[in-house]
Length: 246
Image 1: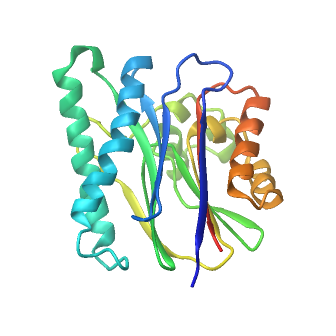
Image 2: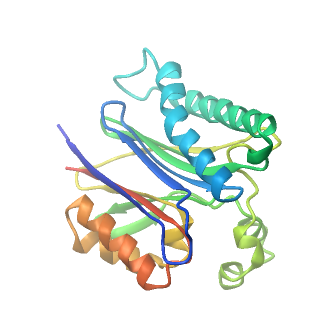
Image 3: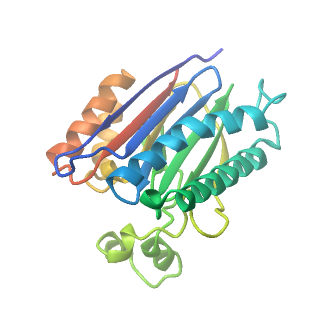
């Protein structure tokens, strides 16, 4: 039977004074997530904190009776929880003038046994490391990614496009949030990485792969990833979670 080791870390970076990134882990529930707040220092921090505190409760309620394994309805229930969370965040921003415009990205992994459901809104990402190869599990919900998917931009053009930071989906958006959800089978030795764009905006996939393969301890891998982002300039807050299937 596989056991899970995990670690998480967040850092303000080198250019910001406030940290709007959050991470959360509950191995008993099998839930791991990172969130990146939007809307200014006060509103962004509040938004990501709401995600980290409220989403686990919404999921626990919706997955009640489905705790042992991730059945076919798990992805649907997870999406419903994210939609409810987005509506709550949107309502709260309307009720508090100082929080208007707040929102957050989120990427999460719900792990039960050898199965994981990955879901996200925004440009926070999930990666799978398996047998020395790194695979990205999520597509950014940004204008640049949309143009790339349509064939209107090359990968190189998308990397430097101003639409790279303009989100098309996020928690708290005006329209109904439609998360992307994928179920994957896990194998012993697999690693999941959840991270905000404070990492991926500064560090390429090769460096991510090196950090994950060279540091078998999840906590050390997190520290190396955060250090790499800061060494590259640390232009944004950084949050990472590494989940190891032993």
